[in-house]
Image 1 (cartoon, one colour):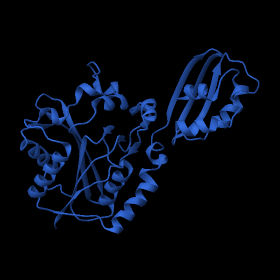
Image 2 (tube, rainbow, N blue to C red):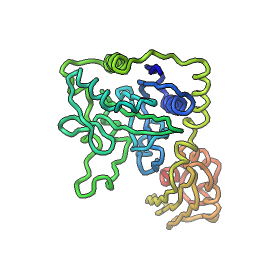
Image 3 (cartoon, rainbow, N blue to C red):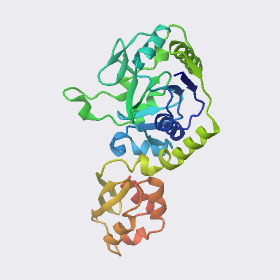
Length: 321
């Protein structure tokens, strides 16, 4: 069966992850796909979003978080990051194709550990993941070409558990952009074109353009799942938060669970003064999505100054987030 090559133009992360789902679950042909996302954090299928990202940073920078269907860890994407996907092409190890494409540019890389591609000095430039659906296989990964390592490091939280027995390195120090190692400089667009040419020849691919039916199905998946906070955050496991802040009006601490993306079991303690019982305030927030804008809007409908004398809705928002 002919392998079809898609050089995607969309940079919408929710749409792009929907396209991955569609090509895996609703098509039967072999595909190769090259694509890029605008600034975004893409988390693994079973990851806890709250512990993998710096929530303050991504909300301040308006960076969307999208949950993919494959496993593996959280990654930061921007237009300097190139993504590749192989659908039902397991007969040839897909990483070999990528490494050979890089070798043609004068870059030597190798597989390392569970799912990384690294340079000879051990610095990572790619992470890969695999997903199966009814015997069909998706294998995809990232290629850091000219990505912002500053924004990458700010958006992601390093997990100390991953570095047992050694100092925790910064995210930024462990990765490298391929553009830094090219013998001859090239743009990310030129790099994409090189990958398309090399893979197209190596795997005897035919270019493919989405049909109207394809686009409608992908749009539906984006709107129903990958652009939906219930999928992107609600799939995170229950997580317990404890927050404490000292305000001029007193010390306030909040303890709550986030389950299915929503606030549960909120309790507030402190030495603040009040006119109305704190339990009422807690009940007013329980069940709402743990999302800064949603909670900010909700706090505007609550008489916060009566529950916490001298505290504004913005004060309480800063406590909860």
